[in-house]
Length: 286
Image (cartoon, rainbow, N blue to C red; front, side, top):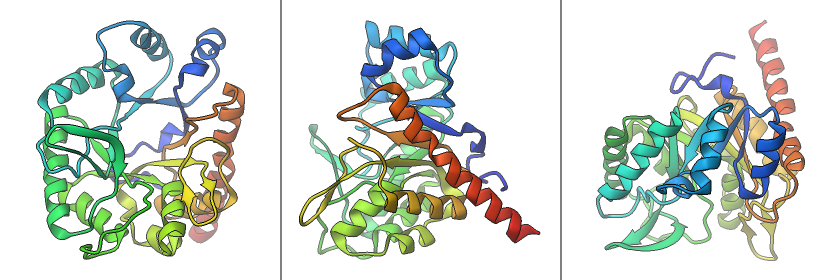
């Protein structure tokens, strides 16, 4: 399949998150991994073990940064002190792109430490896109925004979530971190078709894909990242790469974390779906 025209990172393959319980195993065994995703805020420190581990990882692995606190949808301007620390880290890691969430989570300097859903209005899309552009210009690297899982909706919304995502990324001229687990969770919580969501996302802007596990409750699904990927999410992933082409893919496993090998084996299941997409593309092209 052709390279993604937005980002061209189709050679990144399958990555996993760099997590504390696996530090010793990775440093001692040096397993073969395509790349690691790091949570930026974990390493925005002046020293200590986190940076010591990171520097050793960087000696032999590719690293991509993923953030949880830029809050592109919050009304206030980006925090310059935070951005200066973030820029220093991007230079240290040489991350090829930086991702964070399409959400809000702060008001007047008070932070919720949560990824809160946005009202899907044109005014919110314009403001969010302006903020993404400002952060991108300051950091001087490509930005990809991630769709979040949600559990509430706003009556003032003027469009669907996928229309809002498209409006934001086109205005900001940025990429998408397409989380197919989040799409599935939100689709069940709000009653929309997850395949329709995928069919309307601008495929050429998808820079990265997340897969993860979630938990089923009686009346809703919760994005927990604490067990293997469920079958409907794998099916959505297959649909996504048929549309977007082979794209850097990351397995998230952030709670009840098992052995490194179990997490890595789960991530590598994505290769079977990539092979299927390549075979289907070859048939279409013949």
